[in-house]
Image (tube, rainbow, N blue to C red):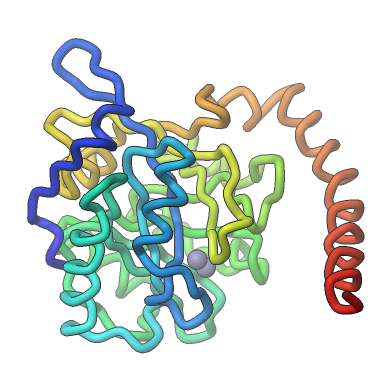
Length: 270
Ligand SMILES: [Zn+2]
Ligand SMILES: [Zn+2]
């Protein structure tokens, strides 16, 4: 992955805060652009969207389908170009296993590894290239049921809260696994359309000016944590607040779905 280039982004850097020698930034995770077969947003629109969300970086995540070594290189260059006005777009690929059940977003200096690569093989290859791999949305197609325990040793993180799949509450099982295995508990969006923004992000502590490499290095060193509306999401991952958040989500989901159906119906008859 051609992400070793340094991309200093003036406007985005001004949104971050500095404490001591390190530098704290806000990053959105798991965002698809028109480079994914099932999303339509151009990279420039994604940059504009997350500029409004006051993010310093966006960890992009395109499906492996249709990618190649050349396409990945062109994509990394396109991310670099679209980052000019901030935030920094960090190029990444979301790999799917042969059954399209387990998804693994990958960032860092990793060449394109192919489509439908078995997960153990994929995680070993990412580690060899010093990349960062995250187990995505364990609830999608009940992927967690087929998770191999060794994956939790091979990966850097697991999505403990994916807006698209978990709704308004974190996933308790993924949160427990992250804590037990010392993994990054990633708060992700899995955004495909602009209306899917949500104040869920990661706070990263960078030891160098904002760049793709500095962002990936913060993940390697686990210098990051999940935030919601700028506050730590940790209290929602367990205990009484976690139970309350899940109870709220159980109430919200059916109402939300019904509302979406009504809006679609209304739009169709207009
Ligand atoms: Zn996915
Ligand atoms: Zn995705």
